[in-house]
Structures are given as C-alpha cells and as structure tokens.
Length: 401
Image 1 (tube, rainbow, N blue to C red):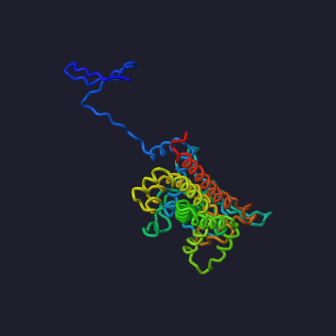
Image 2 (image 1 turned 135 degrees about the vertical axis):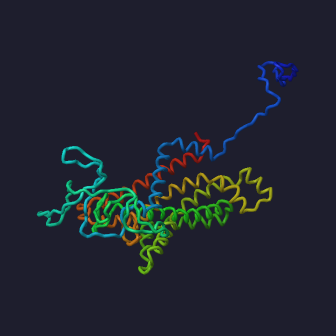
Image 3 (image 1 turned 180 degrees about the vertical axis):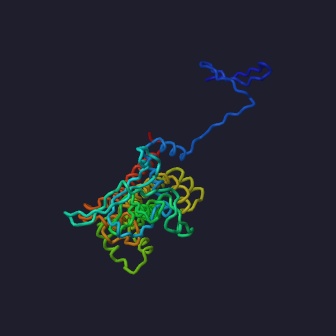
C-alpha cells in the first residue's frame, strides 16, 4: 500500500498542495488546492442521438420523411392547381419538362423559366387524340405566382402558389394529366398529406393499445397475462386482407369522406398493435424483477407509478423504433384498401386513390405516369421509414457496439 506525505513548500509564491506518493509506484501530479475536479456524464439520450447521427443512411431517410411531412403540411401552397380542377381538353396530357432558356432568332439564348406547350395530333392507327410537345409554344413559369384561391389548413385564404404558370389559363402538367385532365403533380402533393398522416394516426392508436395491454400483461402475469395473450393470438390468426375487406365494405356509402378517413384509420390500426404488445410484454417480464423496480416498490410506489414512471421510460427508445417501423405498414394498408376501391374514395385524394386510375392496362399503356408516380411515392416513403426505423433500433441500445 502507499503512504501519504505532505510537503509544504512554495514555488513562485503559490502554495503546492499535497502529493500522494506510493511506496512502489509513481506519484500523482500535484493539484492546486483552490480548484475542484468536475466529472461530466453523458445521458442515454445523448448516446442514442450520437449513435444515430453516425448512420448516414438513417439520417438521410429521416430527412426524406421530414420533407414528405412538410409537403403534406403545405400541400395547398406547393400544388400548382387544385386537386379536383379538371380540364377535359387535356385528357392524358403527357408530362412537361421545365426549361430555363429559350433561343433567340440570332442563335443566342436568354433565361426564361418555362415549359413547352402542346399541339394536338390525331393518331390515325389508334383513331384517338394525342398530345405532342411543341417547342414553339412557350408557357412562362414563375414562383409565388397567383393561381386558384384556397385556404391554407382550411383557415387562411390565399391565392399564391410556390410554382405555376404566369397565366393561370395556360397548361402546366409537370407529371402529366389523368383521364379528366387533372394535374397529377398537384394531386400527388395532396395525396401525400392523407397517406402520410393516416400512418401517424393509425400508429398512435396501435401504440396506445400495444403499450397499455402489453404493460398490463407483462407486469401482472397470471390469468391476466394468459387472457391478453389469447386475445393477441386470436387477432393475429385472422387473415388480414379478408378482414380489412369485410370491415371496409361495411362502411355506409352515406358517410362523409372525413368520417371514412378516420374509420379506415381505425380499421388499419386494429390489427397493428399485437406485435408491439408482445414486445412490450417481453420487456416487462425481464424488467419487473430488476433491482430498481424492487427498490421503487419498497419505497411505496403504486403499481401505476411502477409501470409508467419506472419501467416504461426504460423502453422509450425501443418503442420509438418499433413504432417507426409500423408506420410504413399502415401506409401500405391504406394504399391497398384504396387501390381495391374499398378504402378511401374520391373526392378524398391519397396515393391509393391515385393508383385506382392505374387498374386498367390500357390506361397504363396510354398514360404510364398514372402508375409510376404514386407507386414511386409509396416506395420512397416505405423505404425511408424502414431505414429510419432500422437506424433508431440500432441506436436504441447505445452501449451495444
């Protein structure tokens, strides 16, 4: 063992503190007596955030998800046209590409943000009208232009759009037009709001059911656990698609689109809580006998406080990861039901409703953009949520290298 010796010398007028000298080891550097040593501790959330932001794919997916929700939040402002504005003279008009320069007669070019206009031609083989992009017709395009009036979030009257033709009567179909001459780009933006929000609402319902029932099942055990687990097994054994079809088909046709929206959300969430409940139950079974739970119980904490104050907070990061991975399931479920015609229906606009126009093979052959863009939006959203959820799940245990 070492021994402590005190030296009371002065160096340059400053008193040097005690030095600890070990019998068979080096001495520790002397410390000033007028200073204290502080220790910095990093909390678990800082560790989780640090580990998550080191995953570039997950961070990129999170940025894409944020952009999608911002698009849905400001759909009225971002869309060049209203979703139900039809112009039959432009039925199945092809997409128009944005151009930045126009050619002058002398061969030079000048900056002119625009799209090319259309020229109508007759296909003598198919005996139908076709649209040909005419380079001679220029449709000037601008930012923050005046267009159709709308109410932002249903509250603020506005008529400014982020992008659109300078003359509102000129055609501008960046992603093409559908069978009624409606702008697919605008309808895709409006559909982002419904399809992305229905995932959040459905997951919120599943989160409440899964956390509450899983917590009760894992904490109490016994006959309560047996009863809840049998209910979960019965719900999990039900065929998903036929059950969705039956419940969705039972919705009265007289209900308003908003009512149908919330009912579809409830139907989708009824089968999405079982996996979360099982995972929460397993964690409760593992944690209810831990020392911190026993100490809280001996300290007089109630059962509700034990569940919601001591055990559940330790599962927060894991629950967030599971919920994030459940959102794409809800989006795909809504898209599937709407595509089959038993989910959301017009005038509601969602990605599934947009895909209804792509059920006809002849339509897809004539206007493939009706299938490509809504399907691509679903794929991007689902993949982004999956990558983001994988990143959260890996970062949920910051001590696991």
